[in-house]
Length: 134
Image 1 (tube, rainbow, N blue to C red):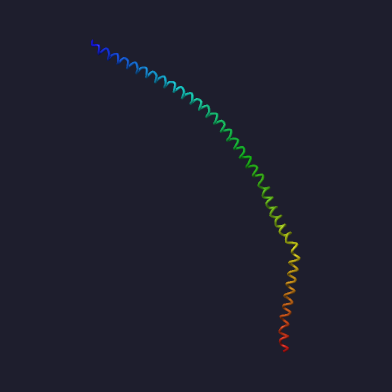
Image 2 (image 1 turned 90 degrees about the vertical axis):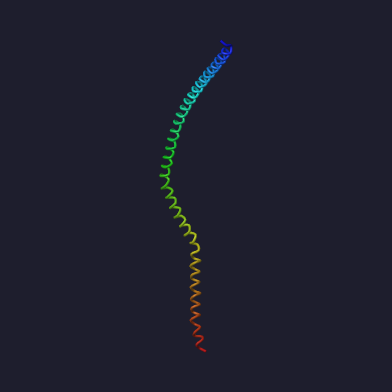
C-alpha cells in the first residue's frame, strides 16, 4: 500500500471526526435552545394567564363604575331639571323686579307725553280761529 493512501485515509478520518464533533455540538446547542424556548413559552403562558385574570378584574371594575355613574346620572337628572326650571323662573322674577322701580317713571313719562300732546292739539285747534278773525 502506498503511503499516500494512508495519508488520504487519515485526512478523510480527521474530516469525518471534525464533522461528527460539529454535528454533536449543533445538536447540543439545538437541544439547549429548544429547552430555553420551552421555558420562555411556559413563563409567557403563565404571564398571559395572570394578565388575563387582571384584565377580567379591571373589566368588571369598569363595568361596576359605569353602572354606578349611570345610576347617579339617572338620579341627578330630575334634580338638574328642577334647578334649571327654578333658575329660569328666578331670572324672570328678577327681570320683572328690576323693571318695577322704573314703572312710575314710565307712567309719569307717558302722562307727561299725553299732556304735551293734548296741549299741542289744543294749540293746533286754536290757530285756525285766530287766523279767521283777521
